[in-house]
Image (cartoon, rainbow, N blue to C red; front, side):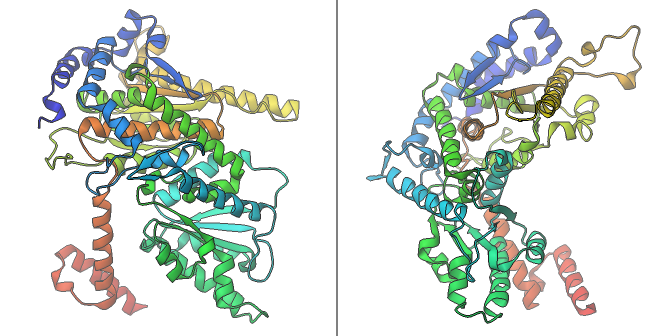
Length: 556
């Protein structure tokens, strides 16, 4: 079967890259005064501006043809219908099912998935209500005040990102519950909480799809021992091992047996399905920390916003489809303009963790070099993706963007409105002024990246060290406001973008065998370090590092 780079559309785009790709964005804007209208689209509370991409209408037409030849429309329907699009693991990828409304129906292999999804949401709602009413009490009878989420990867990055982004949406008049996150296996995050928190009012959420993730379980075992030593060890009347585990732990996993074996009560378990990948899982039980921060009403609004984008993705023509267009811009830059770096630049402090979230979503999904047919790809797939809050990045790595030797594609993300609900008029005006300043920086930076020296009006020649080459492509994404609905739509937009690109590249975005290999080798190496056997099988470098570890242990 021919690969995508053997299609007519791919060859046509290669020719286009030799022509359009050599033109400067300045010239494109001079020749087409209506680029913004031509290359902007709106859906689900988002406006997508692709006018600063280094393409023209003919290029976009070829890219849309490429999407057709790659089978993107049919692949989209297979994804949303629950077909087995995760080829290597022989199962569907149904994160979109987690945000279907209760009256929807999705039958997969003879079972309607929607009732089970909403049963879990209802169970979450009951849990959240107990916390917010002060009725979830620890083993000594005191209401829980601190909840620590123990997870890693998608069980950490998604909930962490969303709780930070939507902290303004905390429900009023509820019992105060603070949510915290610990993911590092070295215990450095956890130890900070254990030295500050009251064990009587602290609960831990163990989030692990397999419930075998060593990072999470190492933290969980430490947390369990900390609670038992302080609560059972204090010999308070009626407080025993079972009660502590019951009142201070919630589990979220696809393995209820392992949760129960560890000690988590059955009615304090939330279901996680095999057909949901970890990095796509914040929409279900893994999102419990989100619901604890913004309430179940806010959580359901997050799901509704994502579902709105799902419907748009399924029904909008390719030429007006936001995920498809965003994906095609990336394909054009990566595969035809040879731009292999992509920076995510939110201009809103609430989106501080959005770039880190996308790093996993994109690079774990599409960091692949073998097609679904088992062939080694001979074209680039996922670019290196990183980012930071735009106002901070301006003082960090924008120097490279403006005057460095690397071509970088950038996504600028900002809400149009903020602070209208601040009660004090003077404070509101000051804050709204700061927001206008933030938007000005966002728009100015993308403009200078595009125009280079043409953005600067100066008399006389400029010395070379002050020259800006410009011609750096960027996308701007504007949200009407940052709300649960628009954040849900924004996340879903990038999820579907990843799927479209994977479809075009002919790779599976829903497995992560490289990650699994790393875990396996890490466990084997740990056994060697602890057992001091098997060292002769190691390479010289690893052998030297392990011996250095042993030497340090002897010296202590």
